[in-house]
Length: 391
Image 1 (cartoon, rainbow, N blue to C red):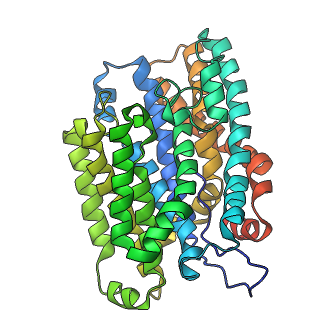
Image 2: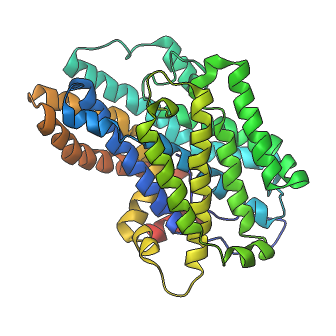
Image 3: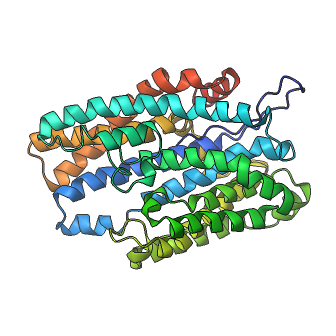
């Protein structure tokens, strides 16, 4: 996803405030992106070996949807941090905000669409399956960033891109819907209103189910976490609360529930959003608690093991180009899997080939993609932060 290191945006009419420097956010993004790649590796192998006992067991432990949940909470958090510091005001106004978001999200997205087309042609030439390569509706809807609103195109071309469209749509709701409610009523009401909006959109327009419209509530949870960081009374109060323990309990209970009751999870092929929405919100609440816990931990003298891991240079490096990983890993894995089939690999050998070769090729290709199509569109100051974290 298009999350960046949280920072204040420059305003030429005011003195610039020091930037908010929370490098562990890149570590979180790296973990989420790497887990999504792992699940999609498993997806390819499961498609070829659906009856293998080991893979059936692995299929029960697929939770990449919750990585997207975390991405959305993080997105709300990162976008809200500078806004909360300026008392709920968008620096530069709505138009400047939209231009910043478009510059950050769209150039890598459209470049990834082009690369996806090339990789899909390569994969089709290896596999002989050309069904989705030339799909006019899929291409037009992806170009307009509305493919998530159409069930036939939501996962076409490049499956993970559905959530990029959802995030792009939430970007408009942030200043036009979420912020006005937050200013007047605070965190609780803004989360409730966003949940009612997202769930209501699905009820009124069930055909948009794959947009996960209720994700706007997860974005509002990220906003609420950002608000805690600029409220001295809450910060003093939160210093005494075991947020990390709560996050572990909430997250583990959600994963256990997902394992034993798959009908409540997005991985179920007969998904019923009325059942999925509460669990997605529960896991979003886990993300909210985790952000509070990490912020609380980094203020204590001496870094904890979790912070040391999240701020480990390789994690920061991967987190710095995690959006590129997310954008192009799926067509890369399709191509690598086509090679595995050409080699005659099956079952465990296919899985190990995808784990080793798939990860290496994905990370290498994604980093080159980042250098070419993502980094040039970061503003100068943000680029310097990202590069300093990755060095």
